[in-house]
Picture 1 (cartoon, helix red, strand yellow):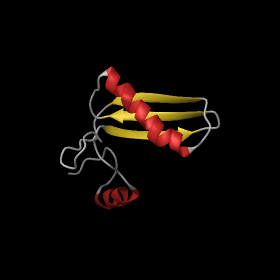
Picture 2 (cartoon, one colour):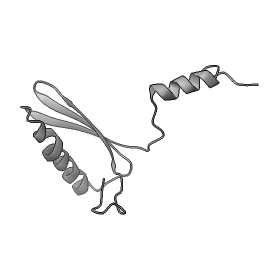
Picture 3 (cartoon, one colour):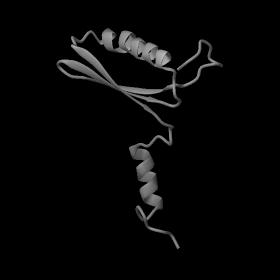
Picture 4 (cartoon, helix red, strand yellow):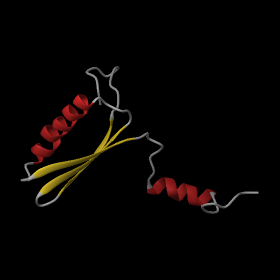
Length: 94
């Protein structure tokens, strides 16, 4: 999130972090492009606030950054409801 007050908070994106025995891998998906300096500051903040606070030894923090948009959130419950109401992928209802 970006911003200091509840009203001005603005979602930047999501991050997934995976710890291995020698490195930490991150996938950062931004909802909009950032300037290079803002992006590096964000990665440093993620490293300080999330990676280093996990207190896991690491040789490197490797981050893949993507810019995209959120198209939905899906869960088992969604698919159970969808399976009840549809005939399958690619099937057209007549």
